[in-house]
Length: 282
Length: 247
Ligand SMILES: Nc1ncnc2c1ncn2[C@@H]1O[C@H](COP(=O)(O)OP(=O)(O)OP(=O)(O)O)[C@@H](O)[C@H]1O
Ligand SMILES: [Mg+2]
Image 1 (cartoon, each protein chain N blue to C red):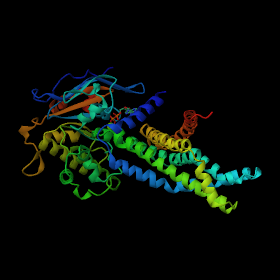
Image 2 (cartoon, each protein chain N blue to C red):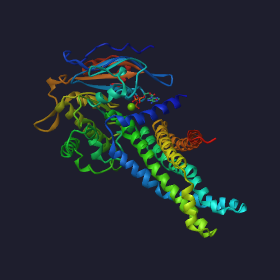
Image 3 (tube, protein in one colour):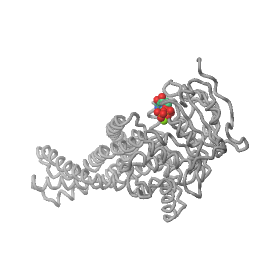
């Protein structure tokens, strides 16, 4: 296996080390039809941290997110989310845990027979403890966050791909979960829309301090996230002053052939000598 | 083998969910509306014409023995114990088992089922149980409607083709029905409804492989539920006969 170094064991990389990890993968392996997709991967996501996951198509990025939510069960290893062992939990208790985690699916996965309003309100309605006015208020708030208030009565099929992605974000954040999992939120979108979506994610991170895993194909998205912050007074995303770079808890993780070949922060990434990684970041 | 196990698990879950919160009454009424009123036209039509053709065929035989007056009895027993439940079941299977398989199947392949689980909602509670309960409930009433329409169809044939006295037809049709016939005829749709919805949902939930997979699931759901209805019909009839003590 020339050219494939061992996974870099740096728990709590780029986080301050004092906050407990919200997601922990330990030697997780999974295969589909005899083909090992993930082969003993370990990493941690610290509270408040954003970790970007890279890898070529089919390297198992979506699989990592689905494992974290317990939508898939690993063949080997342990996964802890908010202190609970996802691998040992039955579906019934997983439903409880998943209420604290939001996920934006790769293809948005909006309910196509429900309107945008009903999609975003889905979780609130399921919880049965809010009044209709309160639900409506929170739906509006969430949709205005993604700047799509005018679409409440539309069906997902009437929206563009980028709008659907934003509705999916609104649906994931409406309950203000502690963890957000974004699966390729900018995949297949034009640069302008991609920037809008990355700004939304930065805003979510800085306003609500959510921990998140972000799968993406675009390294520039992750770099933008590491170098920008949301300015609440000006209500816009601004570049960090040069001296403050690195203040943002932002980790990078690269998957290759079922292994983690890189796990570290932006400086470590920039200094990496590994050829494959250099190729990735160039 | 795995499939049978998965199916049984889903079928068991669909019923045990009834006793666990949350329950989805709104989804249940919506499904009941879709299954019940949506199927009404075809159930009315099949019921009516089955009764009519039953009368036509049996009249032919009965005439040879000079006992045309038995037409009412034949139609009513045939309709109520057998043809009403089975044909209604098959019709609803064709319409709704396929509908459920394609709807849930599309939700699986577009990750909507995963999204629902990710949002903390159990798809077996939100999607499967309401379908199962509404199908059982509605099939019961659809079968009664079909039985009635069959009797009317038979009555019309008896009156206008064979010139039989309507009063005689209805009283013989009515009097010949015994408790066990009616009971048999009303228990069957409960089983059939359960089969239709669980099989439809099972094939939908286990759909794989894009739109083609959904198409396959839909066809399989109709075939499997129809065959299962006929099989269960045989055994249910045998069992109920044993209980009521003939043969
Ligand atoms: N449900 C499944 N059944 C069979 N194989 C699967 C399944 N889900 C994923 N795979 C396989 O696992 C591998 C990783 O899939 P995954 O969706 O995680 O890739 P990805 O990194 O998200 O790719 P992309 O960047 O294209 O989204 C692929 O080879 C895929 O074929
Ligand atoms: Mg993916």
